[in-house]
Structure formats: structure tokens, C-alpha cells
Length: 187
Image (cartoon, rainbow, N blue to C red; front, top):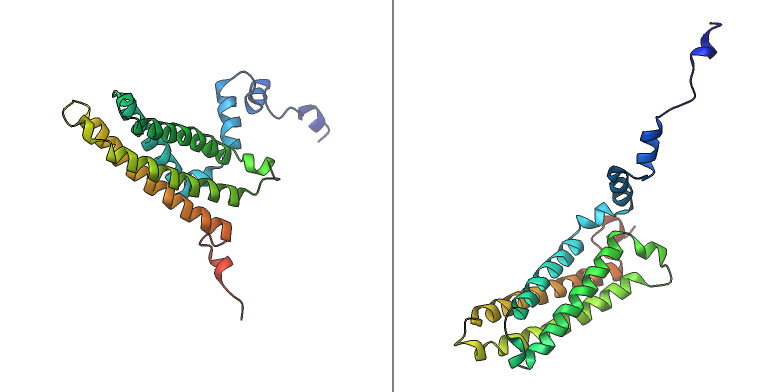
């Protein structure tokens, strides 16, 4: 028993393990720091999946239009403006929610802001979809007819995705996110 203190060490980990946990210069430490900041539950939610659909299909829509000579039909200027602007804003909003920026910006009423954003985006995308669908006909003799038709289809799908996001944002704003604990009334 007398030799016990000489066998005890106070070091709990090596220097390399400590630097990788703190980020250090290792890629593994960076991955640990980034994933610890992400809201993993958000990625698995329906609003996040809808936002990923909006980002992916919105990108596909404006890429299809951009690959064609869309400047010959003035309506496509509006379609491209709406598609690119909302693609950028939705990507920024998705990243802000994913990395919990709303917890740091407490002065912003986030449920109301997200609901208003998705409502406005739905209306803007509906007008862009209608302009896109109405302007496909001038390309009927060119090889870009399929591009513009597919862009109109993806515009309709993105419009529906924004509408669903607006609905779920409304539920979140009203506080009825489907939680049984919030929807039961004590007797």
C-alpha cells in the first residue's frame, strides 16, 4: 500500500488525443467540431427534407433554363431571378437552421420569419412557374424544348415543396407541431 502514490499518474490522455478533440490541426478534430455544432434532429425532420428538395430541384430548374438561350423570351428573366434568389436564400436559411444560428439571434421571431419567408417564396415561385410554363411554346422547334418543359415541371414541384414548407412553418408558428403533449387539454 505504501507504493500506491508512485504508481498513479494524473495524465488522462495523450497530447495528440487532446488536440484532436479541440480541433487542432487534424481533419478529424474539425469534423468533430462541425458535427457537434449541427442540429442532427433538424436534418431528419420533414421541414429540412422539404428545404433540401427546394434547394436541389430549384438548382436543377435554373440550371436547365440557364443551359438554353432563355434571353429570347423575357419571361425567363423573371423565372431566373426568382429561382436563383430563392435558391440562395433557402440555402442560407437551411444552413442557419442547421447550425442553430436562430439560438444566437434571439431578437428575430424565427417561427414567424420562416413562415413568412416560405409563404412569400410560394407565391413568387407560383408566378415563376406559371411564367415558365406559359413560355415553353416558343422553343417547340428547337432542341431546348425539353429543357424548358422539364424546368416548368421542376418549377411546379418546387412550388409545391415551398407550399408544404409554408404549411409546416405555419404549424410551427402556431405551436401545433404535432407534439401530443402540446395538443392535449387537461380535464
